[in-house]
Amino acid sequence: MRTTTPRRIAAAIAAAALGLTSACTAGGGGSDDGGPKAEDKQTIQVWHGWSADHEVKGFEDAVNGFRKLHPNITVKVTGNQTDDQITNAIRGGTPPDVVASFTTDNLGQFCQSGAWQELTPRLKKSGVDLNIFPKAVQDYTQFRGKRCALPLLADAYGLYFNKKLMKGNAPPKTMSELAALAKKLTVRDRDGRIKVAGFMPSVQYYEHTPQHIATSFGVKWLGADGKANFSRDPAFTEYLKWEKDLLDWYGYDEAKRFMRTMGQEFEASNPFQKGKVAMAVDGEWRTKFIEKEAPGLDYGTAPPPVSDARAAQYGGGFTLGTIMGIPRGSKHADAAWEFVRYLTTDTGSLVTLANALGNVPSTLQALSSPDLRLPAQFGTFLNVFKHPGTTTSPSSPNGGDYLVQLQKFVQDEWEPGKAQDPARALKALDEKVDKALKLAGG
Image 1: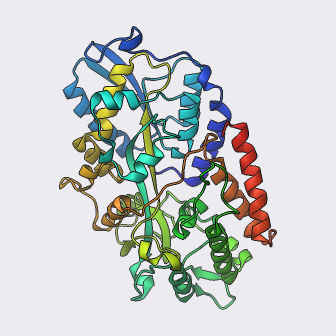
Image 2 (image 1 turned 45 degrees about the horizontal axis):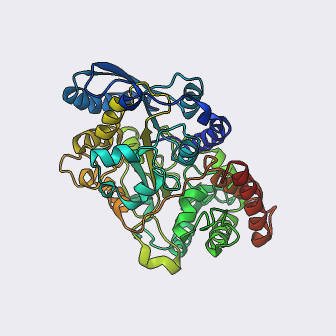
Image 3 (image 1 turned 90 degrees about the horizontal axis):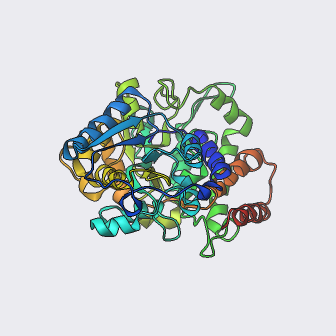
Protein backbone atom coordinates (compact mmCIF):
# COMPACT_ATOMS: atom_id res chain seq x y z
CA MET A 1 0.00 0.00 0.00
CA ARG A 2 1.45 3.37 -0.87
CA THR A 3 -1.36 5.92 -0.74
CA THR A 4 -0.38 9.25 0.72
CA THR A 5 -1.93 10.32 4.00
CA PRO A 6 -3.86 13.27 2.46
CA ARG A 7 -5.46 10.91 -0.06
CA ARG A 8 -6.33 8.46 2.67
CA ILE A 9 -7.93 11.20 4.78
CA ALA A 10 -9.93 12.48 1.81
CA ALA A 11 -11.10 8.95 1.09
CA ALA A 12 -12.17 8.50 4.70
CA ILE A 13 -14.28 11.65 4.63
CA ALA A 14 -15.84 10.76 1.28
CA ALA A 15 -16.67 7.20 2.27
CA ALA A 16 -18.24 8.33 5.51
CA ALA A 17 -20.50 10.64 3.55
CA LEU A 18 -21.33 8.15 0.81
CA GLY A 19 -21.50 4.88 2.64
CA LEU A 20 -24.05 5.54 5.33
CA THR A 21 -26.88 4.63 2.99
CA SER A 22 -25.22 1.61 1.41
CA ALA A 23 -27.06 -0.78 3.73
CA CYS A 24 -30.12 -0.22 1.54
CA THR A 25 -28.46 -2.01 -1.38
CA ALA A 26 -29.92 -5.33 -2.46
CA GLY A 27 -28.46 -8.51 -0.96
CA GLY A 28 -25.58 -10.50 -2.43
CA GLY A 29 -25.67 -13.51 -4.69
CA GLY A 30 -24.23 -16.95 -4.03
CA SER A 31 -25.32 -20.56 -3.75
CA ASP A 32 -27.38 -19.83 -0.62
CA ASP A 33 -29.74 -17.54 -2.51
CA GLY A 34 -29.74 -18.95 -6.01
CA GLY A 35 -26.38 -17.73 -7.33
CA PRO A 36 -23.77 -20.01 -8.89
CA LYS A 37 -21.69 -22.35 -6.75
CA ALA A 38 -17.91 -21.94 -6.65
CA GLU A 39 -17.40 -24.98 -8.89
CA ASP A 40 -19.70 -23.64 -11.63
CA LYS A 41 -18.29 -22.00 -14.73
CA GLN A 42 -18.50 -18.22 -14.24
CA THR A 43 -16.75 -14.86 -14.44
CA ILE A 44 -15.96 -12.68 -11.44
CA GLN A 45 -15.03 -9.01 -11.42
CA VAL A 46 -12.22 -7.88 -9.12
CA TRP A 47 -11.41 -4.23 -8.36
CA HIS A 48 -8.26 -2.96 -6.68
CA GLY A 49 -6.50 0.38 -6.26
CA TRP A 50 -3.02 -0.29 -7.62
CA SER A 51 -2.07 1.59 -10.76
CA ALA A 52 1.71 1.53 -11.35
CA ASP A 53 2.86 -0.97 -13.97
CA HIS A 54 4.90 -3.10 -11.54
CA GLU A 55 1.97 -3.16 -9.10
CA VAL A 56 -0.58 -4.21 -11.70
CA LYS A 57 1.75 -6.93 -13.00
CA GLY A 58 2.41 -8.19 -9.48
CA PHE A 59 -1.30 -8.48 -8.79
CA GLU A 60 -1.88 -10.34 -12.06
CA ASP A 61 0.96 -12.74 -11.24
CA ALA A 62 -0.70 -13.54 -7.91
CA VAL A 63 -4.10 -13.97 -9.58
CA ASN A 64 -2.60 -16.43 -12.09
CA GLY A 65 -2.05 -18.87 -9.23
CA PHE A 66 -5.78 -18.77 -8.51
CA ARG A 67 -6.63 -19.20 -12.18
CA LYS A 68 -4.60 -22.42 -12.30
CA LEU A 69 -6.42 -23.83 -9.27
CA HIS A 70 -9.87 -22.75 -10.49
CA PRO A 71 -9.97 -22.98 -14.30
CA ASN A 72 -13.77 -22.75 -14.21
CA ILE A 73 -13.58 -19.20 -12.81
CA THR A 74 -12.61 -16.42 -15.19
CA VAL A 75 -11.16 -13.47 -13.28
CA LYS A 76 -11.42 -9.99 -14.76
CA VAL A 77 -9.30 -7.45 -12.89
CA THR A 78 -9.73 -3.67 -12.90
CA GLY A 79 -7.11 -1.50 -11.20
CA ASN A 80 -6.89 2.11 -10.04
CA GLN A 81 -10.27 1.95 -8.28
CA THR A 82 -10.94 4.23 -5.31
CA ASP A 83 -13.24 3.76 -2.33
CA ASP A 84 -15.58 6.34 -3.85
CA GLN A 85 -15.92 4.28 -7.03
CA ILE A 86 -16.45 1.08 -5.04
CA THR A 87 -19.06 2.67 -2.78
CA ASN A 88 -20.94 4.22 -5.70
CA ALA A 89 -21.05 0.87 -7.49
CA ILE A 90 -22.45 -0.81 -4.38
CA ARG A 91 -25.05 1.91 -3.90
CA GLY A 92 -26.00 1.66 -7.59
CA GLY A 93 -26.54 -2.10 -7.37
CA THR A 94 -23.73 -2.90 -9.83
CA PRO A 95 -20.76 -3.84 -7.64
CA PRO A 96 -17.84 -6.05 -8.64
CA ASP A 97 -17.56 -9.41 -6.90
CA VAL A 98 -14.35 -8.67 -5.00
CA VAL A 99 -12.89 -5.35 -3.83
CA ALA A 100 -9.60 -4.29 -2.29
CA SER A 101 -9.19 -1.00 -0.48
CA PHE A 102 -6.12 0.88 0.76
CA THR A 103 -8.22 2.85 3.25
CA THR A 104 -8.18 0.63 6.32
CA ASP A 105 -9.72 3.49 8.32
CA ASN A 106 -12.97 2.99 6.40
CA LEU A 107 -13.48 -0.59 7.51
CA GLY A 108 -15.83 0.32 10.36
CA GLN A 109 -18.13 2.06 7.95
CA PHE A 110 -17.93 -0.83 5.46
CA CYS A 111 -18.86 -3.37 8.14
CA GLN A 112 -21.52 -1.37 9.98
CA SER A 113 -23.36 -0.29 6.84
CA GLY A 114 -23.33 -3.78 5.36
CA ALA A 115 -21.58 -2.49 2.23
CA TRP A 116 -19.08 -5.34 2.64
CA GLN A 117 -20.43 -8.78 3.52
CA GLU A 118 -19.82 -10.51 6.85
CA LEU A 119 -17.18 -13.22 6.30
CA THR A 120 -17.31 -15.08 9.62
CA PRO A 121 -19.64 -17.88 8.41
CA ARG A 122 -17.41 -18.49 5.39
CA LEU A 123 -14.26 -18.43 7.52
CA LYS A 124 -15.71 -21.07 9.85
CA LYS A 125 -16.97 -23.25 7.00
CA SER A 126 -13.59 -23.08 5.26
CA GLY A 127 -11.66 -23.74 8.46
CA VAL A 128 -9.53 -20.59 8.23
CA ASP A 129 -7.66 -20.00 11.49
CA LEU A 130 -7.39 -16.25 12.09
CA ASN A 131 -4.25 -16.84 14.15
CA ILE A 132 -2.30 -17.02 10.91
CA PHE A 133 -2.48 -13.20 11.09
CA PRO A 134 -0.78 -11.07 13.78
CA LYS A 135 -3.16 -9.67 16.40
CA ALA A 136 -3.02 -6.09 15.10
CA VAL A 137 -4.07 -7.37 11.67
CA GLN A 138 -6.97 -9.28 13.15
CA ASP A 139 -8.01 -6.03 14.85
CA TYR A 140 -8.03 -3.82 11.75
CA THR A 141 -10.04 -6.27 9.66
CA GLN A 142 -13.06 -6.37 12.00
CA PHE A 143 -15.43 -3.89 13.59
CA ARG A 144 -17.26 -4.64 16.82
CA GLY A 145 -16.97 -8.35 16.24
CA LYS A 146 -18.09 -8.20 12.62
CA ARG A 147 -15.42 -9.30 10.17
CA CYS A 148 -16.13 -7.99 6.69
CA ALA A 149 -12.57 -8.09 5.34
CA LEU A 150 -9.33 -10.03 5.30
CA PRO A 151 -5.86 -8.46 5.00
CA LEU A 152 -4.01 -8.37 1.69
CA LEU A 153 -0.47 -7.21 2.48
CA ALA A 154 0.26 -4.67 5.16
CA ASP A 155 2.18 -1.51 5.96
CA ALA A 156 4.50 -1.27 8.94
CA TYR A 157 6.20 1.96 9.94
CA GLY A 158 9.80 2.42 10.99
CA LEU A 159 12.59 4.98 11.24
CA TYR A 160 14.69 5.58 8.12
CA PHE A 161 18.11 7.16 8.65
CA ASN A 162 20.76 8.46 6.26
CA LYS A 163 24.02 6.84 7.38
CA LYS A 164 26.20 9.65 6.04
CA LEU A 165 24.16 12.35 7.75
CA MET A 166 24.03 10.34 11.01
CA LYS A 167 27.80 10.85 11.41
CA GLY A 168 28.25 7.64 13.31
CA ASN A 169 25.33 8.14 15.70
CA ALA A 170 23.14 5.11 16.43
CA PRO A 171 19.44 5.39 15.58
CA PRO A 172 17.45 6.69 18.58
CA LYS A 173 15.28 4.33 20.59
CA THR A 174 13.31 6.87 22.61
CA MET A 175 11.53 10.07 21.65
CA SER A 176 13.82 12.19 23.81
CA GLU A 177 16.81 10.65 22.03
CA LEU A 178 15.13 11.39 18.70
CA ALA A 179 14.60 15.05 19.58
CA ALA A 180 18.17 15.47 20.83
CA LEU A 181 19.67 13.79 17.78
CA ALA A 182 17.40 15.76 15.43
CA LYS A 183 18.85 18.99 16.83
CA LYS A 184 22.40 17.65 16.66
CA LEU A 185 22.10 16.62 13.01
CA THR A 186 20.26 19.72 11.77
CA VAL A 187 22.35 21.99 9.55
CA ARG A 188 21.47 25.68 9.09
CA ASP A 189 23.01 28.37 6.93
CA ARG A 190 24.39 31.62 8.34
CA ASP A 191 20.90 33.15 8.26
CA GLY A 192 19.48 30.34 10.36
CA ARG A 193 17.66 28.69 7.49
CA ILE A 194 17.42 24.92 7.54
CA LYS A 195 19.63 23.18 4.99
CA VAL A 196 19.30 19.69 6.44
CA ALA A 197 16.67 18.75 9.01
CA GLY A 198 17.59 16.08 11.53
CA PHE A 199 13.92 15.14 11.84
CA MET A 200 10.90 17.24 10.88
CA PRO A 201 8.17 16.73 13.53
CA SER A 202 5.36 18.63 11.79
CA VAL A 203 2.25 16.72 10.75
CA GLN A 204 2.68 18.47 7.40
CA TYR A 205 5.71 16.28 6.72
CA TYR A 206 4.32 13.36 4.74
CA GLU A 207 3.92 10.33 7.04
CA HIS A 208 4.57 12.22 10.30
CA THR A 209 0.87 12.25 11.08
CA PRO A 210 -0.55 11.81 14.59
CA GLN A 211 -1.73 8.37 13.52
CA HIS A 212 1.89 7.30 12.98
CA ILE A 213 3.81 9.36 15.54
CA ALA A 214 1.42 9.50 18.51
CA THR A 215 1.45 5.70 18.49
CA SER A 216 5.01 5.90 19.82
CA PHE A 217 3.57 7.38 23.02
CA GLY A 218 1.19 4.46 23.50
CA VAL A 219 -2.00 6.43 22.90
CA LYS A 220 -5.39 4.77 23.19
CA TRP A 221 -7.47 6.32 20.42
CA LEU A 222 -10.92 5.38 21.68
CA GLY A 223 -12.06 4.50 25.17
CA ALA A 224 -13.74 1.26 26.19
CA ASP A 225 -17.02 3.12 25.70
CA GLY A 226 -16.16 3.75 22.04
CA LYS A 227 -15.83 7.50 22.61
CA ALA A 228 -12.91 9.76 21.78
CA ASN A 229 -10.09 9.48 24.29
CA PHE A 230 -7.94 12.54 23.55
CA SER A 231 -8.51 14.40 26.82
CA ARG A 232 -8.70 11.26 28.97
CA ASP A 233 -5.37 9.74 27.87
CA PRO A 234 -2.33 11.74 29.05
CA ALA A 235 -0.26 10.17 26.27
CA PHE A 236 -1.91 12.57 23.77
CA THR A 237 -0.75 15.59 25.76
CA GLU A 238 2.73 14.08 25.96
CA TYR A 239 2.76 13.65 22.20
CA LEU A 240 1.57 17.21 21.58
CA LYS A 241 4.19 18.73 23.86
CA TRP A 242 7.00 16.67 22.32
CA GLU A 243 5.93 17.64 18.80
CA LYS A 244 5.55 21.35 19.59
CA ASP A 245 8.81 21.61 21.54
CA LEU A 246 10.84 20.26 18.64
CA LEU A 247 8.91 22.25 16.06
CA ASP A 248 9.44 25.45 18.07
CA TRP A 249 13.17 24.71 18.22
CA TYR A 250 13.20 24.76 14.42
CA GLY A 251 10.91 27.79 14.36
CA TYR A 252 7.38 27.33 13.04
CA ASP A 253 7.77 29.76 10.14
CA GLU A 254 11.19 28.40 9.21
CA ALA A 255 9.91 24.82 9.33
CA LYS A 256 7.05 25.76 7.01
CA ARG A 257 9.49 27.47 4.63
CA PHE A 258 11.71 24.39 4.62
CA MET A 259 8.79 22.06 3.95
CA ARG A 260 7.67 24.21 1.01
CA THR A 261 11.06 23.56 -0.63
CA MET A 262 10.76 19.80 -0.34
CA GLY A 263 9.98 17.47 -3.19
CA GLN A 264 6.97 15.22 -3.57
CA GLU A 265 6.57 12.22 -1.28
CA PHE A 266 6.34 9.65 -4.06
CA GLU A 267 8.82 11.15 -6.48
CA ALA A 268 12.61 11.01 -6.73
CA SER A 269 12.74 14.49 -5.18
CA ASN A 270 11.59 13.12 -1.79
CA PRO A 271 13.76 15.00 0.76
CA PHE A 272 15.00 11.88 2.53
CA GLN A 273 16.12 10.44 -0.79
CA LYS A 274 17.81 13.75 -1.64
CA GLY A 275 19.73 14.00 1.63
CA LYS A 276 17.77 16.97 3.01
CA VAL A 277 16.39 15.04 5.98
CA ALA A 278 18.55 12.79 8.18
CA MET A 279 15.77 10.73 9.79
CA ALA A 280 12.13 10.12 8.89
CA VAL A 281 9.30 7.80 9.88
CA ASP A 282 7.95 6.08 6.81
CA GLY A 283 6.37 2.88 5.58
CA GLU A 284 8.12 -0.19 4.24
CA TRP A 285 7.30 0.83 0.67
CA ARG A 286 10.00 3.50 0.84
CA THR A 287 12.60 0.75 0.36
CA LYS A 288 11.14 0.07 -3.09
CA PHE A 289 11.20 3.74 -4.05
CA ILE A 290 14.79 4.14 -2.86
CA GLU A 291 15.80 1.08 -4.83
CA LYS A 292 14.42 2.64 -8.01
CA GLU A 293 14.95 6.37 -7.46
CA ALA A 294 17.99 6.67 -5.19
CA PRO A 295 19.97 3.42 -5.56
CA GLY A 296 23.16 5.06 -4.29
CA LEU A 297 21.64 6.17 -0.98
CA ASP A 298 23.39 4.60 2.02
CA TYR A 299 20.61 4.25 4.55
CA GLY A 300 19.41 2.09 7.39
CA THR A 301 16.11 1.33 9.08
CA ALA A 302 15.13 0.76 12.70
CA PRO A 303 11.93 0.41 14.70
CA PRO A 304 10.29 3.76 15.48
CA PRO A 305 11.40 5.31 18.79
CA VAL A 306 9.02 5.10 21.74
CA SER A 307 8.32 7.47 24.61
CA ASP A 308 10.87 7.22 27.40
CA ALA A 309 8.39 5.61 29.78
CA ARG A 310 7.76 2.87 27.21
CA ALA A 311 11.39 1.98 26.47
CA ALA A 312 10.64 -1.70 27.14
CA GLN A 313 8.19 -1.67 24.21
CA TYR A 314 10.85 -0.66 21.69
CA GLY A 315 10.68 -2.88 18.63
CA GLY A 316 6.98 -2.56 17.96
CA GLY A 317 5.24 0.14 16.00
CA PHE A 318 2.17 0.97 13.93
CA THR A 319 0.56 -1.10 11.20
CA LEU A 320 -2.41 -1.11 8.87
CA GLY A 321 -2.87 -2.43 5.37
CA THR A 322 -4.85 -3.22 2.30
CA ILE A 323 -8.15 -4.96 3.02
CA MET A 324 -10.11 -7.26 0.71
CA GLY A 325 -13.75 -8.24 0.85
CA ILE A 326 -16.94 -9.14 -0.96
CA PRO A 327 -19.30 -6.21 -1.57
CA ARG A 328 -22.98 -6.48 -0.93
CA GLY A 329 -24.69 -7.30 -4.21
CA SER A 330 -21.98 -9.61 -5.54
CA LYS A 331 -23.62 -12.05 -7.93
CA HIS A 332 -20.89 -14.68 -7.56
CA ALA A 333 -20.29 -14.63 -3.82
CA ASP A 334 -19.11 -18.24 -3.49
CA ALA A 335 -16.49 -17.86 -6.20
CA ALA A 336 -15.59 -14.45 -4.80
CA TRP A 337 -14.93 -16.04 -1.41
CA GLU A 338 -12.64 -18.65 -2.94
CA PHE A 339 -10.71 -15.81 -4.56
CA VAL A 340 -10.50 -13.74 -1.37
CA ARG A 341 -9.44 -16.75 0.68
CA TYR A 342 -6.73 -17.70 -1.80
CA LEU A 343 -5.17 -14.27 -2.20
CA THR A 344 -5.19 -13.44 1.51
CA THR A 345 -4.03 -16.78 2.96
CA ASP A 346 -1.92 -18.53 0.30
CA THR A 347 1.76 -18.08 1.11
CA GLY A 348 2.90 -18.18 -2.51
CA SER A 349 0.38 -15.54 -3.53
CA LEU A 350 1.32 -13.21 -0.68
CA VAL A 351 5.05 -13.61 -1.32
CA THR A 352 4.53 -12.85 -5.01
CA LEU A 353 2.65 -9.68 -4.12
CA ALA A 354 5.13 -8.63 -1.44
CA ASN A 355 8.10 -9.03 -3.78
CA ALA A 356 6.39 -7.05 -6.53
CA LEU A 357 4.91 -4.25 -4.43
CA GLY A 358 7.43 -3.96 -1.62
CA ASN A 359 4.78 -4.40 1.09
CA VAL A 360 4.73 -6.64 4.15
CA PRO A 361 3.11 -10.07 3.62
CA SER A 362 0.22 -10.36 6.03
CA THR A 363 0.44 -13.92 7.39
CA LEU A 364 3.01 -15.25 9.83
CA GLN A 365 3.98 -18.05 7.46
CA ALA A 366 4.57 -15.69 4.54
CA LEU A 367 6.68 -13.42 6.79
CA SER A 368 9.23 -16.21 7.19
CA SER A 369 9.16 -17.48 3.61
CA PRO A 370 12.62 -18.06 2.08
CA ASP A 371 11.19 -16.86 -1.23
CA LEU A 372 10.91 -13.24 -0.10
CA ARG A 373 13.26 -11.12 -2.24
CA LEU A 374 13.45 -7.81 -0.42
CA PRO A 375 16.38 -5.54 0.55
CA ALA A 376 18.16 -6.03 3.87
CA GLN A 377 16.59 -2.84 5.26
CA PHE A 378 13.16 -4.44 4.82
CA GLY A 379 13.84 -6.83 7.68
CA THR A 380 13.03 -4.06 10.16
CA PHE A 381 9.45 -3.88 8.91
CA LEU A 382 8.94 -7.64 9.03
CA ASN A 383 10.06 -7.58 12.65
CA VAL A 384 7.93 -4.56 13.56
CA PHE A 385 4.89 -6.13 11.92
CA LYS A 386 5.07 -9.35 13.92
CA HIS A 387 6.13 -7.70 17.20
CA PRO A 388 3.52 -8.29 19.95
CA GLY A 389 3.63 -4.60 20.86
CA THR A 390 2.67 -3.38 17.40
CA THR A 391 -0.73 -1.71 17.32
CA THR A 392 -3.16 -0.14 14.89
CA SER A 393 -5.85 2.55 15.05
CA PRO A 394 -9.31 1.10 15.75
CA SER A 395 -12.11 1.18 13.23
CA SER A 396 -14.95 3.63 13.70
CA PRO A 397 -18.38 3.92 12.05
CA ASN A 398 -17.47 7.13 10.20
CA GLY A 399 -14.30 6.33 8.32
CA GLY A 400 -11.67 7.29 10.88
CA ASP A 401 -13.06 10.78 11.38
CA TYR A 402 -11.38 10.96 14.79
CA LEU A 403 -7.99 10.69 13.06
CA VAL A 404 -8.95 13.37 10.56
CA GLN A 405 -10.08 15.74 13.31
CA LEU A 406 -6.94 15.26 15.40
CA GLN A 407 -4.68 15.93 12.44
CA LYS A 408 -6.64 19.07 11.52
CA PHE A 409 -6.37 20.31 15.09
CA VAL A 410 -2.60 19.73 15.27
CA GLN A 411 -1.95 21.33 11.88
CA ASP A 412 -4.31 24.30 12.09
CA GLU A 413 -4.36 25.14 15.80
CA TRP A 414 -1.60 23.44 17.78
CA GLU A 415 1.43 23.91 15.55
CA PRO A 416 0.88 27.62 14.83
CA GLY A 417 0.27 28.26 18.54
CA LYS A 418 -3.41 29.20 18.32
CA ALA A 419 -4.25 26.60 20.98
CA GLN A 420 -2.34 27.24 24.19
CA ASP A 421 -4.12 24.92 26.63
CA PRO A 422 -3.92 21.27 25.48
CA ALA A 423 -6.31 19.99 28.14
CA ARG A 424 -9.04 22.41 27.11
CA ALA A 425 -8.41 21.90 23.39
CA LEU A 426 -8.45 18.11 23.63
CA LYS A 427 -11.69 18.15 25.63
CA ALA A 428 -13.31 20.26 22.92
CA LEU A 429 -11.96 17.84 20.32
CA ASP A 430 -13.45 14.89 22.20
CA GLU A 431 -16.86 16.57 22.17
CA LYS A 432 -16.63 17.27 18.44
CA VAL A 433 -15.56 13.72 17.58
CA ASP A 434 -18.16 12.13 19.87
CA LYS A 435 -20.94 14.14 18.26
CA ALA A 436 -19.86 12.89 14.83
CA LEU A 437 -19.61 9.31 16.10
CA LYS A 438 -23.13 9.52 17.51
CA LEU A 439 -24.50 10.76 14.19
CA ALA A 440 -22.78 7.83 12.46
CA GLY A 441 -24.30 5.33 14.85
CA GLY A 442 -21.28 5.03 17.13
